[in-house]
Length: 209
Image (cartoon, rainbow, N blue to C red; front, side, top):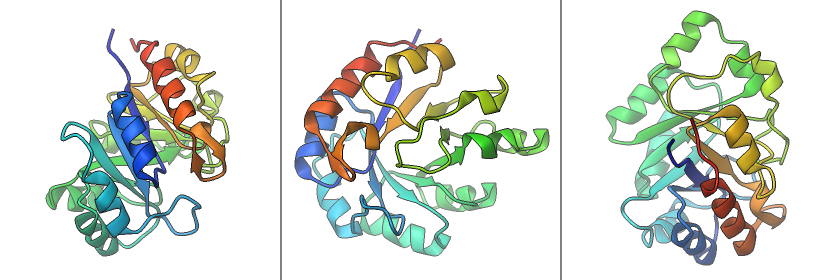
């Protein structure tokens, strides 16, 4: 049994970044996708990431943005990892990786379920994140749409997670890790340090197969 990988996403303040890292998060996420209440500038993300321990990934979240723009922001923000949430292809990820960044590819559960077998094989070996249809909205991930066909390899579970349900979902679905944003907020876009601590403690109390 292995401890789950934990990513706390949508961080905007030094306090919440510090709490996430001190509580044992493996990654902290900064949102650059337009229209989100959690969006930060590249410069602000660089400031926040500068205090993060070297072993913790700093992840930038992008959605349907030009890859040249993504790379520009990722460099300015001094990110370690780029997470793509839109219609990006394997070739897009390879371009990002070629520039020295790690990657994560986020897909909604219905979008992953709709992939043909050959398309799924193209993503095998890459880090995937399965989310609800609307990322960051607190909508619960619906595993039923997958028909038991979960990704092979490293994948993160996201969508509607919170301190009360994360351990049970890890035990039921066996992801390599979890990603949370709205489930550790006191109001939309406002992270709660106490909820961050509680979420990480609950996730650490679970084990993946």
